[in-house]
Image (tube, rainbow, N blue to C red):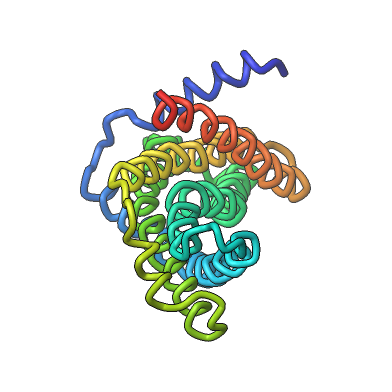
Length: 247
């Protein structure tokens, strides 16, 4: 199947998914459920990874910037900008592509091969709108908050590492995370979060609806959803960086 065939089917599926729902109350309830599943369900792994990556980033920066000619606040500044610009929006999205994307593709793929989606169509329900739209809307809501939490915990992880190891003094670290702060970096991170939320949920939903066969095909759909999401996230990371930071 050619890439243009996939793009056409993807566009048709998304247009059907965002068709006007029959009952907004039902859709809104599903959005809340998906926000809980995607958002709260992802916080533990996001929190653990962010704290440890913030700590490791600080220690690596302290090792690489040990030259006396480098300002003493550089480690804190580099840790802050690394968390805001790349780790929180991009690396966390790649991790969520594995957790959230595989889950969505697996659930929808199972529903497809067990003919539950066909049953919804027989009942007069638009399965695309009922199943896909709440997932995408929920992800668009919660991903920016996940990124903000990741940034905060990453900077906190650097603070903890500074406190426990003494590699960088607390005063220098705090001064570094405050020094020359650019508010647009936060906007940049949130823009990337929205794009990546749409990429992960829509591609995983497409792969789930594309599933046919049995259990093996369901697993293959989850794998494809993760791989394609990661590739497209990295592509859009490059494009958004070029458009937002280098222009």
